Amino acid sequence: MPRPPDNGTPFHIGELARRTGRTVHAIRWYETQGLVPGVVRDEGGRRLYGELHVGWLDLMDRLRRTGMSIAGMREYTALALQGKATLRQRRDLLAAHRARVAETIADWNQALSLVERKIDFYDDWMQSGHRPPLLPAEAMRAPPPRRKAR
Image (tube, rainbow, N blue to C red):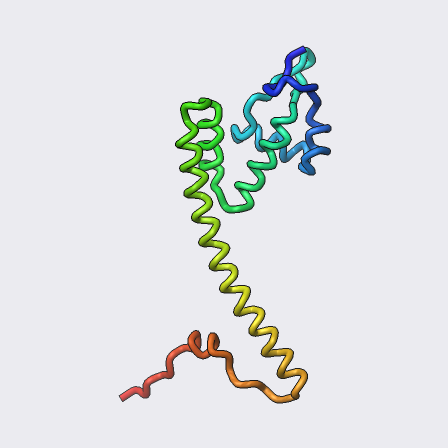
């Protein structure tokens, strides 16, 4: 019987779906996109997976959730398939992705802070019955006053 790359006990797609929390359909989609390396098939043509596939699917899902493009994920997968010679390239690809993720997190934290201040604004208004003064962030984002036409 063929074995997956980790030489552990192989299992079928239903077990991989159960262990990863992904649907069979999603796993097949990842495969058709070239994002699941090392899948072998048994004598009946059914896919066989191993422990490495569990971790690999988790990595692919995390990369996608953090905004990496499918093309970027394909590039990373292709580099991984080339082995040790591409360690620097894979590291650099992930470092660039990390920088983009960190920038997105900073943007989202700034947006979250504004949302939290706005919630506090409404809480104060409901509690006091009077509209509080505008928040500084709102004042900075307010459109400039219109000039009178001459």
